[in-house]
Length: 261
Ligand code: PGA
Image (cartoon, rainbow, N blue to C red; front, side, top):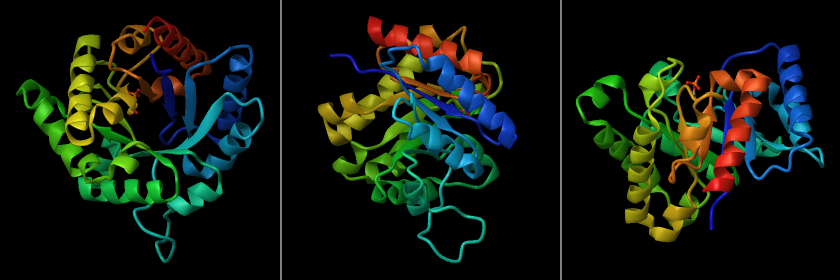
């Protein structure tokens, strides 16, 4: 039996409040006529969480609410941070963790990523754990080793029950925001490898059920060829999720790929 796909929009640090509202409304209106199997998650900047959760809570809403980051700590004296229990109390369902931009600019290590995942899982949120290699590692053929180390330091520390509630996004750092996408074959090869790592630790059923997404310069033109790969369960979309028409086309590609699989 095939799984439906998931498309996650990662808005990063973009959009004014009015622009964010406009984007959400346009996406919602554009999706109104679809019989969607694909699950759509919108991850705005945290300050706009309510904008998304308000829409997501509507009875006929076509999307779920997510955010891009969470604190590794419980509530308390951590100025500027936002806790997993706060996300839960706002009815946020998903949260990205370990994005390469957080690893690079905010020193987020695998240890921190694991703490954040545990915070989210304790609050019944779904972590979307990002992993991926830099260009140097790809060129020297060490890309699988790098991703394996990231997975072992994070996912392998979860219980099987926690793993069942976790998603993975493979995002080669060299493809993020660069316009250079992994080829469908490269994406498939790595996602199959990640699934095999999950299988080794957690068994075949958990590995099959785990959503593993591709991210990195995914757009309306290349989404279908990537999503059609057997191990690609959907996409984590950055730049292209900021334009409603482009994002809708990516969701359409996920629908088509989901039906064809
Ligand atoms: P991009 O970003 O689609 O702009 O390359 C993807 C991501 O960083 O999640």
